[in-house]
Length: 282
Image 1 (cartoon, rainbow, N blue to C red):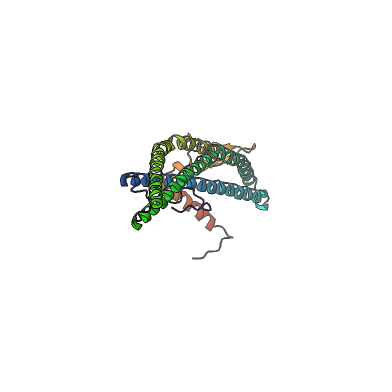
Image 2: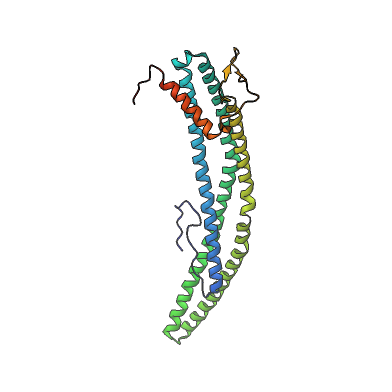
């Protein structure tokens, strides 16, 4: 078993075989358990990595939208049309509010998701240290077993050799006992840690979901009033959206049937093409 402290993961290798100090089944069970724990550690690190990328992407999108609305607000085109200027001003106000929501999402996610996962990931260092100590016992046992085998193969009947061989056999028996004790402790404690992973991670995921609900819910509410409610929308003198004439209720474009929506789009494009400033490419 090779331990490399420079690797990012703590459980980066599989334990060495200790057979015949322990049974082959015990060897296999420990190997399977370590692989399960390696998978959990990898998943934990991936969650942290992807969440950081996600928050960075949200922040970049927020900055890009702020830049967009700022540029629109300073555009001469918007100052030439009162309705367009009002829409852009409202759009910019919404992005400013949304920027506060993005900062809150980042703060909440950091406290309730990233920090708990980091603490959970740090626990794998303790597991790795325990396995490392177990590995030292295995290597020591192998060294003693090699010395015993060498003395037995010599067949030397000298008293000093016999005494040395007997002492090494006692050391070998003690090493086997230590390996057995260490293995038993690992197989009792590690499964408890593995079984509790869901109990620890589930609250962090629930907190993330709630943060997402708040963030996207507030975003939807902020932008809803900017969405035109159908044909015939107009603004009052105060700059507020007016109820369309001859309609009992407003209908969001997202609820308009696809054929009707396409018809509206083609009608608008036809109006644009009919303008004298649009060159006919047909």
